[in-house]
Length: 167
Image (cartoon, rainbow, N blue to C red):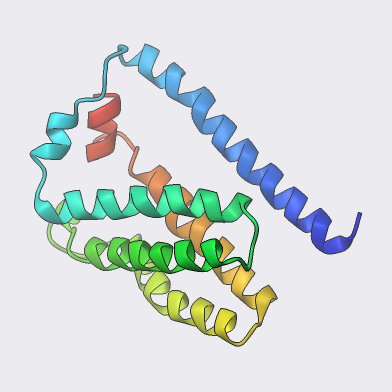
């Protein structure tokens, strides 16, 4: 197998393991904490800044998943890519206004938001200059770090999405 193809295969395998782990852990957590339907009224009662943040993050997650597994370089890829960039920027910028968990101060997770705001234009610039390898690295890093890892932290006990799904 070609080196680049092997790396993509390993990345997709790692992403698959992460998704499978999340899928496997969800029922265990739900059984342990009592199985129930998600309480979406908690999300509806949240401030608009949080609703906007969640909507943008879910949009970026859905589009990013399609982009990761789809054919690259097509018109669809470019159109979805711009939509993903807007969704990620909205997610990152809106997160800067969410400070309820840290008594009004920013926390370490806001560093990911700052990095996203810096890295998005760099990734777009790389794509515009046909630096495919650099573009792929930035976008994959933003998807994994900015969405999957940061998103996993939203399911910690005491946080809003924990209460929506498990509380």
